[in-house]
Length: 220
Image (cartoon, rainbow, N blue to C red):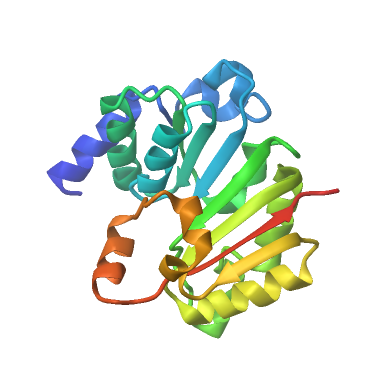
C-alpha cells in the first residue's frame, strides 16, 4: 500500500463524515440516518459508486436542505470526497464505505428519496451482467429503499450500458421515464447544475456524448 493511500485510510478512520467498519454507526445506522447522523428530517439522496464524491459534494452545496450520502467500497476515493465536504463545512454530507450489494444492511425500506448512479463500471462482458448497477436485482433493491415515487438517475458514457439499463427500467415498475443520449444538448441537462465528475469532464472535452435517464420508482 502506498504512503498516500495509508494516509487516506487513516483520514477515513478519523473523519466523522465517513461511516465504515469499526465505527459504532456502521452497525446501527440502518433506519436511523436522519436521527443519528444528520439530526434532521430532510430527504436522503444516495450516490452509488460515488468515487471521489464529486456529485455528492456538488449536489450538497446546491441543496443544503437535502441529505446526501456517497457510497463506495474504495476507501482512498471516499477520503477525497470526505475531505472536500469538510473543507466546505458541509453538514449535509456523509460517506458510507461498503459494497453496494449490501445496501439493505444500511437502509430500510422507504428511507431514501433519490438514487444517483454516476458513471458506474459498465461491466461489459456477458458474464458480468449481474454486477451492473442497473441489473434487475439492483433495481429491485432500489425499489425497496426508495419512497413511493422516489427518483432513480443514471449517467453513463457507455452506449451499451445505457441501452441495457433502458431496457431493464422499462421492464421494471417505473413511471415518468425520461432519457437522452446527448445530455448536454438536452433540456434534462438543467437538472445537473453543471456538476461533472473528473472522468465526465474528460469525456466532455473529448467530444463524447453523455447518456442520462431518470424515472420514478419505489413501491407504490
